Image 1 (cartoon, rainbow, N blue to C red):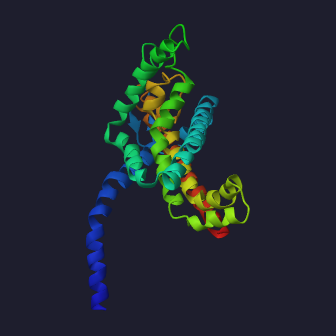
Image 2: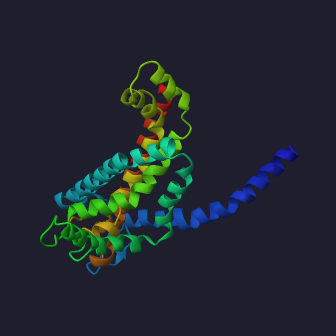
Length: 285
Protein backbone atom coordinates (compact mmCIF):
# COMPACT_ATOMS: atom_id res chain seq x y z
CA UNK A 1 0.00 0.00 0.00
CA UNK A 2 2.87 2.35 0.72
CA UNK A 3 4.30 1.67 -2.71
CA UNK A 4 0.95 2.34 -4.39
CA UNK A 5 0.53 5.53 -2.37
CA UNK A 6 4.02 6.68 -3.30
CA UNK A 7 3.34 6.00 -6.98
CA UNK A 8 0.12 8.02 -6.79
CA UNK A 9 1.95 10.91 -5.14
CA UNK A 10 4.69 10.82 -7.79
CA UNK A 11 2.10 10.69 -10.58
CA UNK A 12 0.18 13.58 -9.05
CA UNK A 13 3.38 15.61 -8.67
CA UNK A 14 4.25 15.09 -12.33
CA UNK A 15 0.75 15.96 -13.51
CA UNK A 16 0.31 18.96 -11.20
CA UNK A 17 2.12 21.56 -13.40
CA UNK A 18 0.09 20.56 -16.47
CA UNK A 19 -3.17 20.58 -14.52
CA UNK A 20 -2.41 24.01 -13.07
CA UNK A 21 -1.51 25.47 -16.48
CA UNK A 22 -4.58 23.97 -18.16
CA UNK A 23 -6.78 25.29 -15.36
CA UNK A 24 -5.36 28.81 -15.46
CA UNK A 25 -5.05 29.26 -19.22
CA UNK A 26 -7.84 27.05 -20.58
CA UNK A 27 -10.53 26.25 -18.05
CA UNK A 28 -10.71 29.63 -16.29
CA UNK A 29 -10.86 31.71 -19.54
CA UNK A 30 -13.46 29.30 -20.90
CA UNK A 31 -15.60 29.75 -17.79
CA UNK A 32 -15.26 33.54 -18.10
CA UNK A 33 -16.40 33.45 -21.76
CA UNK A 34 -19.29 31.16 -20.82
CA UNK A 35 -20.34 33.57 -18.05
CA UNK A 36 -20.15 36.53 -20.43
CA UNK A 37 -22.40 34.72 -22.91
CA UNK A 38 -25.26 34.92 -20.37
CA UNK A 39 -24.47 38.46 -19.22
CA UNK A 40 -26.26 41.72 -20.00
CA UNK A 41 -24.98 44.73 -21.94
CA UNK A 42 -25.60 48.43 -21.51
CA UNK A 43 -26.08 50.85 -24.47
CA UNK A 44 -22.38 51.76 -24.38
CA UNK A 45 -21.10 48.18 -24.66
CA UNK A 46 -20.17 47.53 -21.04
CA UNK A 47 -20.90 44.06 -19.66
CA UNK A 48 -23.45 44.04 -16.86
CA UNK A 49 -23.86 41.19 -14.36
CA UNK A 50 -27.00 39.17 -14.84
CA UNK A 51 -28.42 36.13 -16.56
CA UNK A 52 -30.25 36.07 -19.88
CA UNK A 53 -30.71 33.73 -22.82
CA UNK A 54 -31.31 36.59 -25.24
CA UNK A 55 -27.74 36.36 -26.55
CA UNK A 56 -28.37 32.81 -27.73
CA UNK A 57 -31.83 33.65 -29.04
CA UNK A 58 -30.35 36.44 -31.16
CA UNK A 59 -28.16 33.89 -32.94
CA UNK A 60 -31.26 32.40 -34.59
CA UNK A 61 -31.81 35.58 -36.60
CA UNK A 62 -31.42 35.15 -40.35
CA UNK A 63 -28.24 37.25 -40.52
CA UNK A 64 -26.45 35.00 -38.04
CA UNK A 65 -27.85 31.80 -39.53
CA UNK A 66 -26.32 32.91 -42.83
CA UNK A 67 -22.95 33.29 -41.11
CA UNK A 68 -23.21 29.75 -39.73
CA UNK A 69 -24.12 28.45 -43.20
CA UNK A 70 -21.15 30.26 -44.78
CA UNK A 71 -18.81 28.90 -42.13
CA UNK A 72 -20.07 25.35 -42.59
CA UNK A 73 -19.80 25.60 -46.39
CA UNK A 74 -16.24 26.93 -46.22
CA UNK A 75 -15.14 24.33 -43.67
CA UNK A 76 -16.76 21.44 -45.56
CA UNK A 77 -15.30 22.52 -48.90
CA UNK A 78 -11.85 23.01 -47.37
CA UNK A 79 -12.01 19.58 -45.74
CA UNK A 80 -13.07 17.88 -48.99
CA UNK A 81 -10.34 19.58 -51.04
CA UNK A 82 -7.68 18.83 -48.43
CA UNK A 83 -8.66 15.14 -48.42
CA UNK A 84 -8.69 14.95 -52.22
CA UNK A 85 -5.23 16.51 -52.41
CA UNK A 86 -3.74 15.18 -49.19
CA UNK A 87 -4.62 11.50 -49.58
CA UNK A 88 -2.64 10.99 -52.82
CA UNK A 89 0.30 12.87 -51.29
CA UNK A 90 0.23 10.71 -48.16
CA UNK A 91 -0.19 7.56 -50.27
CA UNK A 92 2.81 8.44 -52.41
CA UNK A 93 5.01 9.16 -49.39
CA UNK A 94 3.94 5.96 -47.61
CA UNK A 95 4.07 3.53 -50.54
CA UNK A 96 6.18 5.03 -53.32
CA UNK A 97 8.70 7.50 -51.89
CA UNK A 98 10.98 4.92 -50.28
CA UNK A 99 14.09 6.52 -48.78
CA UNK A 100 12.90 9.98 -49.83
CA UNK A 101 9.91 9.78 -47.45
CA UNK A 102 11.65 11.53 -44.50
CA UNK A 103 12.77 14.38 -46.75
CA UNK A 104 9.25 14.82 -48.14
CA UNK A 105 7.78 14.85 -44.64
CA UNK A 106 10.36 17.46 -43.66
CA UNK A 107 9.26 19.63 -46.59
CA UNK A 108 5.70 19.45 -45.27
CA UNK A 109 6.92 20.54 -41.84
CA UNK A 110 8.94 23.52 -43.03
CA UNK A 111 5.93 25.87 -43.42
CA UNK A 112 5.19 25.42 -39.72
CA UNK A 113 8.53 27.05 -38.95
CA UNK A 114 7.31 30.32 -40.49
CA UNK A 115 4.76 32.62 -38.91
CA UNK A 116 1.22 31.89 -40.09
CA UNK A 117 0.44 35.49 -41.06
CA UNK A 118 3.66 35.72 -43.09
CA UNK A 119 2.76 32.59 -45.03
CA UNK A 120 -0.75 33.84 -45.81
CA UNK A 121 0.58 37.31 -46.68
CA UNK A 122 2.85 35.64 -49.24
CA UNK A 123 -0.29 34.44 -51.03
CA UNK A 124 -1.49 38.05 -51.14
CA UNK A 125 1.61 38.84 -53.18
CA UNK A 126 1.28 35.75 -55.36
CA UNK A 127 -2.41 36.28 -56.16
CA UNK A 128 -2.20 40.06 -56.67
CA UNK A 129 -2.60 41.67 -60.09
CA UNK A 130 1.12 42.20 -60.27
CA UNK A 131 1.93 38.92 -58.58
CA UNK A 132 3.91 35.95 -59.80
CA UNK A 133 0.85 33.96 -60.94
CA UNK A 134 -0.52 36.74 -63.15
CA UNK A 135 2.93 37.59 -64.50
CA UNK A 136 3.66 33.94 -65.30
CA UNK A 137 0.31 33.45 -67.04
CA UNK A 138 0.87 36.58 -69.13
CA UNK A 139 4.39 35.48 -70.04
CA UNK A 140 3.02 32.13 -71.25
CA UNK A 141 0.33 33.86 -73.28
CA UNK A 142 -2.50 32.49 -71.15
CA UNK A 143 -3.68 35.97 -70.16
CA UNK A 144 -3.66 39.32 -71.93
CA UNK A 145 -4.29 41.41 -68.82
CA UNK A 146 -3.88 40.64 -65.12
CA UNK A 147 -6.85 38.99 -63.42
CA UNK A 148 -8.05 40.08 -60.00
CA UNK A 149 -7.89 36.96 -57.86
CA UNK A 150 -7.77 38.53 -54.41
CA UNK A 151 -11.06 39.16 -52.69
CA UNK A 152 -12.71 36.07 -54.16
CA UNK A 153 -14.00 32.84 -52.68
CA UNK A 154 -11.45 30.90 -54.75
CA UNK A 155 -8.56 32.84 -53.22
CA UNK A 156 -9.90 32.01 -49.75
CA UNK A 157 -10.08 28.32 -50.63
CA UNK A 158 -6.51 28.38 -51.95
CA UNK A 159 -5.30 29.85 -48.67
CA UNK A 160 -7.35 27.41 -46.61
CA UNK A 161 -6.09 24.35 -48.48
CA UNK A 162 -2.52 25.63 -48.27
CA UNK A 163 -2.81 26.20 -44.51
CA UNK A 164 -4.45 22.88 -43.63
CA UNK A 165 -2.95 20.50 -46.18
CA UNK A 166 -0.02 19.37 -43.96
CA UNK A 167 -2.48 18.67 -41.14
CA UNK A 168 -4.33 16.43 -43.59
CA UNK A 169 -1.31 14.51 -44.85
CA UNK A 170 0.25 13.50 -41.53
CA UNK A 171 -2.64 11.51 -39.97
CA UNK A 172 -3.37 9.77 -43.27
CA UNK A 173 0.32 8.93 -43.66
CA UNK A 174 0.37 7.60 -40.09
CA UNK A 175 -2.58 5.32 -40.93
CA UNK A 176 -1.08 4.12 -44.23
CA UNK A 177 2.38 3.30 -42.90
CA UNK A 178 1.42 0.30 -40.68
CA UNK A 179 -0.60 -1.40 -43.45
CA UNK A 180 0.92 -4.78 -44.19
CA UNK A 181 2.11 -4.70 -47.80
CA UNK A 182 1.47 -8.43 -48.04
CA UNK A 183 -2.27 -7.70 -47.95
CA UNK A 184 -1.92 -5.61 -51.10
CA UNK A 185 0.17 -8.32 -52.74
CA UNK A 186 -2.40 -10.95 -51.75
CA UNK A 187 -5.16 -8.90 -53.36
CA UNK A 188 -3.16 -8.68 -56.58
CA UNK A 189 -2.45 -12.43 -56.49
CA UNK A 190 -6.18 -13.11 -56.17
CA UNK A 191 -6.88 -11.14 -59.33
CA UNK A 192 -7.85 -7.76 -57.92
CA UNK A 193 -6.75 -4.76 -59.94
CA UNK A 194 -5.08 -1.69 -58.42
CA UNK A 195 -8.38 0.17 -58.04
CA UNK A 196 -10.17 -2.76 -56.40
CA UNK A 197 -7.20 -3.43 -54.13
CA UNK A 198 -7.22 0.18 -53.03
CA UNK A 199 -10.98 0.30 -52.41
CA UNK A 200 -11.13 -3.03 -50.57
CA UNK A 201 -7.86 -3.02 -48.62
CA UNK A 202 -5.96 0.25 -48.49
CA UNK A 203 -8.82 2.71 -48.09
CA UNK A 204 -10.72 0.80 -45.36
CA UNK A 205 -7.53 0.30 -43.34
CA UNK A 206 -6.63 3.98 -43.65
CA UNK A 207 -10.09 5.30 -42.67
CA UNK A 208 -9.03 6.16 -39.09
CA UNK A 209 -6.41 8.52 -40.52
CA UNK A 210 -8.92 9.98 -42.98
CA UNK A 211 -11.41 10.62 -40.18
CA UNK A 212 -8.73 12.22 -38.01
CA UNK A 213 -7.60 14.43 -40.89
CA UNK A 214 -11.18 15.52 -41.56
CA UNK A 215 -11.60 16.43 -37.89
CA UNK A 216 -8.30 18.32 -37.73
CA UNK A 217 -9.29 20.39 -40.77
CA UNK A 218 -13.02 20.91 -40.33
CA UNK A 219 -13.01 22.09 -36.71
CA UNK A 220 -10.40 24.89 -37.03
CA UNK A 221 -11.77 25.86 -40.45
CA UNK A 222 -15.06 26.81 -38.80
CA UNK A 223 -13.40 29.57 -36.78
CA UNK A 224 -10.50 30.70 -38.96
CA UNK A 225 -10.14 34.48 -39.21
CA UNK A 226 -7.01 35.69 -41.00
CA UNK A 227 -7.37 33.81 -44.30
CA UNK A 228 -10.87 35.05 -45.29
CA UNK A 229 -9.86 38.60 -44.35
CA UNK A 230 -6.50 38.70 -46.14
CA UNK A 231 -7.35 36.66 -49.22
CA UNK A 232 -11.13 36.94 -49.41
CA UNK A 233 -11.35 40.59 -48.46
CA UNK A 234 -13.77 39.77 -45.66
CA UNK A 235 -16.66 39.75 -48.15
CA UNK A 236 -18.24 36.63 -46.65
CA UNK A 237 -18.54 36.84 -42.89
CA UNK A 238 -17.83 33.57 -41.10
CA UNK A 239 -17.71 32.73 -37.42
CA UNK A 240 -14.14 33.87 -36.87
CA UNK A 241 -14.80 37.27 -38.43
CA UNK A 242 -18.12 37.58 -36.59
CA UNK A 243 -16.52 36.97 -33.18
CA UNK A 244 -13.83 39.58 -33.82
CA UNK A 245 -16.35 42.14 -35.03
CA UNK A 246 -18.70 41.58 -32.09
CA UNK A 247 -15.89 41.92 -29.55
CA UNK A 248 -13.90 44.78 -31.07
CA UNK A 249 -16.13 46.75 -33.45
CA UNK A 250 -19.69 46.38 -32.17
CA UNK A 251 -18.66 46.12 -28.48
CA UNK A 252 -21.20 43.38 -27.97
CA UNK A 253 -19.12 41.10 -25.77
CA UNK A 254 -22.03 38.93 -24.51
CA UNK A 255 -23.17 38.10 -28.05
CA UNK A 256 -19.58 37.47 -29.16
CA UNK A 257 -19.11 35.16 -26.18
CA UNK A 258 -22.30 33.30 -27.13
CA UNK A 259 -20.96 32.77 -30.67
CA UNK A 260 -17.68 31.51 -29.20
CA UNK A 261 -19.45 29.01 -26.95
CA UNK A 262 -21.61 27.84 -29.84
CA UNK A 263 -18.49 27.35 -31.96
CA UNK A 264 -16.98 25.33 -29.12
CA UNK A 265 -20.16 23.24 -29.01
CA UNK A 266 -19.86 22.56 -32.75
CA UNK A 267 -16.28 21.43 -32.19
CA UNK A 268 -17.42 19.10 -29.42
CA UNK A 269 -20.09 17.61 -31.66
CA UNK A 270 -17.48 17.09 -34.37
CA UNK A 271 -15.23 15.25 -31.93
CA UNK A 272 -18.11 13.05 -30.74
CA UNK A 273 -19.03 12.18 -34.32
CA UNK A 274 -15.38 11.37 -35.01
CA UNK A 275 -15.17 9.05 -32.00
CA UNK A 276 -18.39 7.34 -33.02
CA UNK A 277 -17.28 6.87 -36.62
CA UNK A 278 -13.86 5.65 -35.45
CA UNK A 279 -15.54 3.06 -33.22
CA UNK A 280 -17.55 1.76 -36.16
CA UNK A 281 -14.47 1.59 -38.36
CA UNK A 282 -12.54 -0.33 -35.70
CA UNK A 283 -15.49 -2.71 -35.29
CA UNK A 284 -15.47 -3.46 -39.02
CA UNK A 285 -11.86 -4.66 -38.96
